[in-house]
Length: 439
Image (cartoon, rainbow, N blue to C red; front, side, top):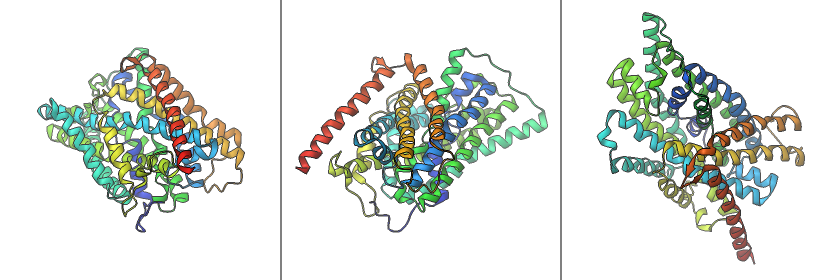
C-alpha cells in the first residue's frame, strides 16, 4: 500500500487529473472538423459520449467505489476473471500507453511548428518531446497530490486562450452577424475516419482508478469525478467548435495544430502564441496525469509477483519510482511514430482492455451480488450487459476502420493481435518465475 504522508487527492484535483487523462482540451479535435465538417463534427462529439463516455464513466464509478485499490482496473479484472485475464488487462493497457503517451509531445511539436518552425526542425523537435517526458517524470516523483493540484492549475491556464477565442468569436458574431461556415461534403471514409479520433478524444475514464488508495474518500469521490469530468469535457469540445462555425471559419482549414491558425485569423498572432504555449502546458498536464496512473500498474503487478520486485520500490511519499522511470523510458522510445498511426494502434489495444472491464462488471454482479457498492449503476444483470454494448460496438467500428493501417510493415490489427499473444507468453513466463520463487 502506498504511503501518502496523510495527504490525498480531493474531488477538484481528481476531476482535473481525470480531465487530463481523458481530454486535455480541444487539442486533437481539428482533424474531426476537417474530415467531417462542423455539423457532422458536432453531431459526432455529442453522440459519442452517450454511447462511449457515459457507459464507461458509470462502469468505472461502480467498480472504483466497490474496490478502491491501487491497480484499479487490473484488480477488477483479476478478481472477476482470474490472474491470467488480470495480467492481460494490465498488459494491454501498458501496451496501449506506449502509443498513447507519445501523442501528447507529438501534438505539442506540431503546434509549435505553426509559430516557430525553426524550433521544431531536425533534432530540435525530438529534444522538445523528450523534455516533456523528463519534466513529467520528475513531477510525478513528487507524488499524487502534487500532480493533482498542479493539474487543476494547468487546466485553468490551458483553457484561458480558448475562453478568449470563444469571446472574440462571440463578439464578431454579435457585431458582424452570423457567417456560418459553408457545409462540406466529405467522402464517407472521411467521416468514418473522424469517429475513431473522437473515440480517442473521449477515452481514458478508467485510468484514474489505479490511484484509488491515494484519493480522499474514493467511494464518494470517484463517481462524482467521473460524471463531472464527462460534462466538462463535452462542453470544452463543443463550445469552441460551435463558435468557429458561427464566425464562418472554413472547416477545410482545420488539421492537427490548426487552433493556432484559427486564433491568428480571429485575434492576431499574440493569441496564436498563447494557444501554442497552452498546448505545451496541455501536453505536459496530460502526460503528467497519465504517468501518475499508468505507472501504478507495473507496481501492482510486482506486488503480485508477476513482475520483478524492483518495480515495487517506493519513495517516502509512496511513489513507485522504479516503475515511473521504466515507463518513461518505454514511452520515450515511441516518440518517432506518426500521429495517425498512434491513434489507430492505441484504440485497438485500449479498446480490448476496456471490453475486459465491462465483462468484469457483469461477472462481479453475478458472482458477488452482495459486494458493497457505494455507487451502483441502476438495474440488474441485463442493464450491466447493456451498458457495454455501445463501447464494444464503437471499438469494433474502430478496428474495422483501422484494417488498412500499417505499422512496422504489417496491418495494425495483426500488430495488435501479436501484442495480445505476447501478453499471454509473458504471463506464462512471469507465472513460472513466481512459482519458482515461492517454492
